[in-house]
Image (cartoon, rainbow, N blue to C red; front, top):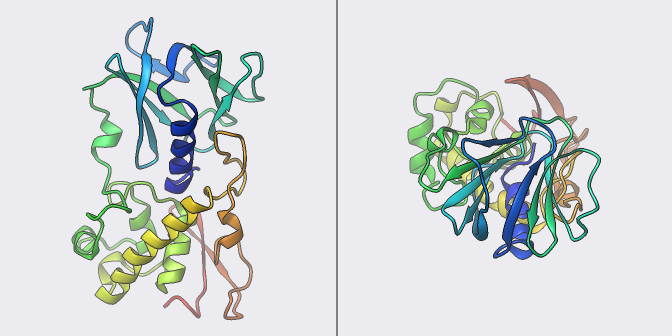
Amino acid sequence: MPELPEVQTIINGLNSKVLGKEITKIIELRPGTVYRQFPITSLDNIISISRKGKYIILQTSSNYKLIIHLRMTGKLIFENDLTKTSNHARAEIVFSDKTKLIFDDVRTFGKIQILKFNEEVPALINLGVEPLSEEFNIIYLKNKLKNRKAPIKNALLDQTVIAGLGNIYVAEILFRAKVHPATSANNIKSTKLERIVSETKIILREAIKHNGTTISDYRNVEDKTGEFQNFLKVYGKKICKCGAMIQKIKQAGRTTYFCEECQR
């Protein structure tokens, strides 16, 4: 699933490719991909492109917005040729200059919602803070975790705690912060919480700089892979830099990679 760095990389690409363009139509190629409660004749120009957690928000000049969630395997591919498509195209956003965005999704879990500008999205209301914001600090994290007995790995994956983190980056954050993923969230010392906050910001910025992480499906708007997979320290690895074997356990249905020697 695309996580914060991948979604931010996509937004950076969209700002370069489609900001200011006029949407002429949205074609739903697979029923259920595009959600709308009213007929759309023209969405006019895209005036801003932003992100909240893993959600992409395209604001138009006609007071409508498009909320896009890529889910597990969704991609947004910019195409100059209207006759071209992709193997798993589910929808297309067509522009007046005869270019388009292809919403490609192998597993078909991704969605495009068309809403009025002031219409609230329940999934966005309950999201936690953005981890790259000043609001994400040790005071915030302490307060969020003080009553949580769940493993710290599970707590950091909770989108109501921190918006945008996923399995890959939480594994990397805990490794660099030297925190065991099974430690109870409410039992972590302040020094380690400070390291979690610091490493979260460092790793996410590094990942955005390298255009995200491609393990399998993720691509940017030019249909190119990210590069941060080449800089991962623990996720998908077999041997730690300390020489110990990387361990794997299941937490909340996801595989966790960690080093028992480095993370205590």
